[in-house]
Image (cartoon, rainbow, N blue to C red):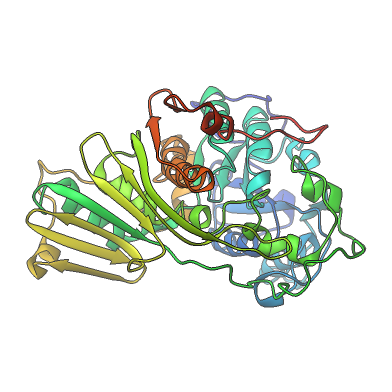
Length: 439
């Protein structure tokens, strides 16, 4: 079955019968979603494992510029061949023969996107590679589960939103805290006025540049290892010599590819802050009082310690900092609530007994982030972490990084997504793409 390049939201996804893939399944063909993974590193493998547990999903392809190598979390091995092996091992368990071959590995994501039998893609690439595959996937008629942070720049994020919207695609951001009942409860307490007048929100994020890939001591140039298409890995980023400390998990400590802890966590706690404040479709009007210490290693140059304030039109101050308690703290005139992964606290404690009534704000209910995406691929309804809201949340992180790098306060217009009377800051809303890449 061939599918048109662009599908309207009313059409169901293309499906392949399980029998055609050599699988036994009790899921009806109309409820099966074929998936390809783009990015077979740290989070990509984690996402892959989650999607493999969904009986409605059939993973048929994986893609990565790295065949396989160490240098991922704690030096672990990853790449397209380990990802393919994981998929085929998973499906082989259900075969009488104990073997299965039906997952194709690709080096170039464009080859995967050309397949008409793929309904949805998981994109788990370094930040500088988020926008181009997302835009091309949307134009190819694929639904998308895209990892946070949404984009490397504000301009790229807006272009991604436009492509997804114009092509009627479902997009779920990997901001999985929205599918955690504790975070939802904290936000419902705030949204329903149980704290009185909200005045301050603290977003406590980790600092530093942890050596996740065990490559801190390998930041000097080295020969490119066999099986790694390094020029493709760089993609739209500036040309630079290969070094293990530049790639894989530790890319996030280099401003050419990411924004450090500020953006790495920017799709989590600030996203919950926006959800609780009810500003998920807007943003702050000013960034003030920035302070930062920057890494000064051979390659790593992101902020290791940071603090800034995002001021909203309502007067609420969001403090974004590595110097406060990690998690999200909402403070109002009549109480406060703090929430982090696995815990929630409130003052007074009785706030935790609150449940929204029939006329109260009830936020989106999702208990499983990946299953919620598949639900929405099938129903054509919006997921719990849609792209416009993800764009607005990560914008706060980008604004903070721009303010910190310039060393001054900034005025921001969330409607036009431009700084007021600061062209140097506006120049930092986007970055040039290395040829031949373009958005």
